[in-house]
Length: 83
Figure (cartoon, rainbow, N blue to C red):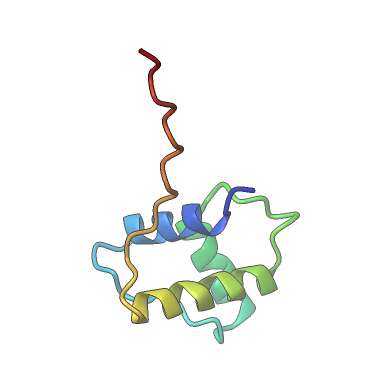
């Protein structure tokens, strides 16, 4: 199962030159939707709810405060070449 948080976090970092926190998860739903659309414009508006966005931004802000600013999925293990 691939994490959906990584693309959002990476996109948030790409749109913000410094690893600052994102919008607060306590903002109004309209502000959260607008910010999420700015960060990830092609998200599925029918399946992603404001509660999902709030969780995403809450986790993102928690990770940034803890010093985690590199949001990349681990490389898939490369099979060793047989000799």
